[in-house]
Image (cartoon, rainbow, N blue to C red; front, side, top):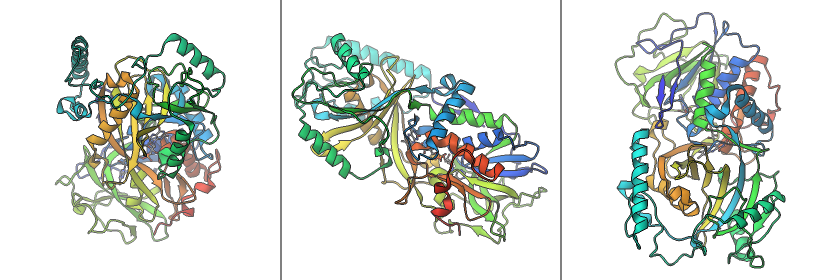
Length: 581
Ligand SMILES: Cc1cc2nc3c(=O)[nH]c(=O)nc-3n(C[C@H](O)[C@H](O)[C@H](O)COP(=O)(O)OP(=O)(O)OC[C@H]3O[C@@H](n4cnc5c(N)ncnc54)[C@H](O)[C@@H]3O)c2cc1C
């Protein structure tokens, strides 16, 4: 299988076993089959740690991963990639944070998936204190670079942007600029800095450096946002609907840096964070530094780790959507039913036959007597033709690592999907200092917007809040991406950072966060269900990238040792939260 990325990155996963023409999968004779459903970061890490476990013998075990669309097509490929020792849940975070470092040391994570330590702050800013952009430009078709799929075209666009910028500089009152944002000088509603610029002078940077190094001692700075207003903001923030993105760490330095009218000289941000315009910022706090915080490129990481698992020859990756769990009469799992997929579409062609194959563990289109089938004929999407359904049985274990899709197979499982949009931006400068930023932007009197900004070595990633407007589709390839939501993200972060406004959007995307919908836990669920040998590792919420290595390692221990020895995960046991019928 080969995956092509826009920026020319190629990932090839070569299975030792390929489905036959009739879609059936040849049996790995005499081996214990472990089935993993879902090729996101949790599935990839599970396969990896299974193959690395001392009790894993490739002559005894074989792993088959079923992935319905493509590896890391969901949130595992579209997440920010923040790693934090202060994430949740506390049972697995320290283990996982250390395992990320270990993997990076082992495989040069810096080079292969952009692993690096970084700082993170949260900031509050009044966006009415920035000049307005012409929002219409952002919606202009000429700005749409969705179709850009190679470096040459991107380079071309960069040149066009550069040329336009130079031309426009010569004009006293530029009225129309296409292809990038500009500050509309006609707008007088918003004020700007005296300099009208985010670039801070050396004295400011020196002063700011002192401030940062003195353990973030609160100082004040120019600005007319009063503490009263800050308090109001905080109250409103607390009253807002809770989304996982708003979970802030508890254990870290919470010292705040608030603007007050008394001290008009402070530059309100850490010195190295020189790419943010400061005039609207009322308040910031350090959430973590390089001791406790890191980042990865989650798409690259997932593919790399899966590749390492597959190099053992003990792992196959099959492009198929699992449609049912099949169980034995003794309430244990026996396998899965599936339909083949290709390029994110279900194959409903004549390639699949209904003939029984000569493999004892493959039974095309036979209806088992015991099954968990959430999809009745009425709510099953019309695209699935069940005549093409095949089965893989005689599985030793089945592990569901399907993220938000888990409840599609197990309807009692309280995990749902929360859609979130994100973009990647090519900034106008080569390097942006490594500061992740959680924002709370006041955009109207009582309206806030909270993008998260993650600079990477070669781009800047920005994601927004979750929405419940569109239900989780059957396949990741069918996720609806709303351009306006992506453009809104760009609009506001561009106001904060000129280097972004002078750059361009590389990717607009959306994915679903796997959220556990119970009051007493934020997830994830890791462990065996009441159906013997059926395991679930899902509901990782906003920390699945961070917690994937620990999840994979713990699952490997559960399967191959009989208990999780690296951490106490009894509170995450799926049987505490739901029952498989
Ligand atoms: C906007 C956003 C930003 C985030 N940022 C961070 C971050 O900075 N740090 C962090 O730690 N976490 C972050 N997260 C959370 C993290 O991305 C998720 O918790 C994690 O990716 C979940 O991984 P997963 O493998 O469980 O699920 P997914 O990535 O959703 O993978 C599930 C896979 O299962 C496949 N599948 C589904 N149904 C079937 C089927 N029937 N048969 C076969 N295959 C199937 C899907 O195609 C998919 O590939 C973020 C999430 C979002 C939405």
